[in-house]
Length: 109
Image 1 (cartoon, helix red, strand yellow):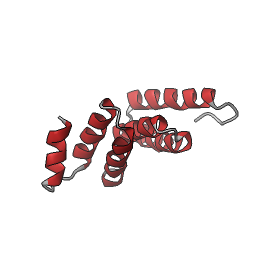
Image 2 (cartoon, one colour):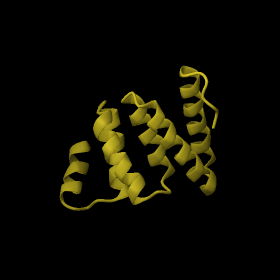
Image 3 (cartoon, one colour):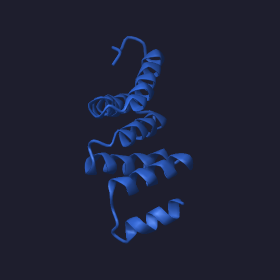
Image 4 (cartoon, helix red, strand yellow):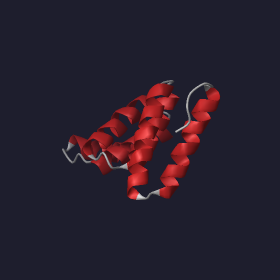
C-alpha cells in the first residue's frame, strides 16, 4: 500500500488525504520519521484535518519528541472541538493525559 501511495505522490497527485494515508502506512511499518514528514504536510495542506493532527502527535511521540507531540495534539483538539469531532477530542485528550502522567508537572489540556 505504501508503495502505491508513494507512486501517486511522485506522479504529482499530492493532497492532504494522500499524505495522511502515507503517514498512516509509515506508522504501521514503524517508520515514524517519514510518517511525521507526511503528516506534517497533511496538516499544512488542510489545517482542519483533526485525524492528521492526531497521527502526527503519535509519530512525534514515537520519535521521542513529547513537546512537539503535545503541540500537535493540542492543535488537533482545537480543530476537533471546532468541528464537533467528539471521538477525536476524546482520543487526543487521552493521549495528552498519558503524556502528562509520563512527565508530571505539566498542565492538563
